[in-house]
Image 1 (cartoon, rainbow, N blue to C red):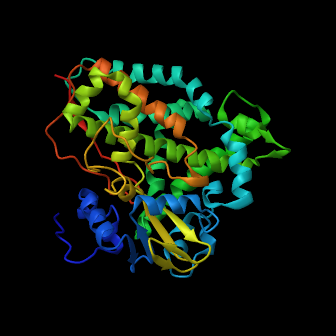
Image 2 (cartoon, helix red, strand yellow):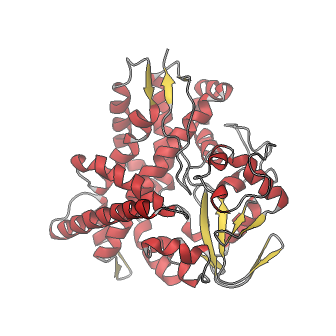
Length: 406
């Protein structure tokens, strides 16, 4: 295992996507941490990085001890220096009764049945995008398919007008830099402006839907009632902001990462072509192998022991989803892409009470995209290029993926 260019255990930016070595050799770094210090204290950003699958699973299951409310964080830790930048992000940053109330109201609109009802729309969007590429000998998969498909479907679900879809994609991409622990003042301004633009747009849209409901998610959320409880207009606007960011960035990266995994493992690609009934298992392996979200935080509400190490109340745990998903104690040959893999559930969608609401839609998006892509292009290969990951902390995806069809 190559440890260059770092001669000691990495810390600070060396453990974020801003660092070129970490960005391009993440598994080398995380394998080293898992072996030497599976609960690793990053003294620069004052957090503990957890890389073992079983430890992450236990933390997910114990939200009363390790949760998402960063207000409990000790001064000087990640939870007080990075997490508060954008204020409370709705139910994402809540636990207990507050989270239960919000999740209960929102989850009714994100059932498997609701996601399946969107499949005809997804089929049509994918067909339209692929039809434009049929006669092309090469194209950028990210720009032509992975980026527009999630944007279009999420915009249609929320009721965002077509003329606004491009700026929503841009605002989403700018917003994610809020996750950079060492963000420059200039980029922090850009990220906050993007957040303000999204907040203002949805506040106005919610106001319009209150006056004149439509057949879209915003209208349904505004009128959803659970045991006398309703979401407030501000809560609905915040949920929409979460969905447009998560539905755009993570889905684009997931589809792009999945394609690269398939094309870099042609024997797995051919197996999937020969056995399309393996698509569901292939989707799960794409999620495990190269998840679009690399890590998520938890904050210690009380002292806790993780993998034999005591962590004080108020400390931040950075749960490395990528590290857990490639833990050899959980998965045989974890760095191998295997669409028939057996093993425990992956952590790509998080876990516990904060398990991703959009799992059903995400899985259908991936399945539709790859089913139609492989049917449309009997030959699909990576073009000669240097694949570059985006330098966006917490998220992982490619800038562009050029493919050839001949």
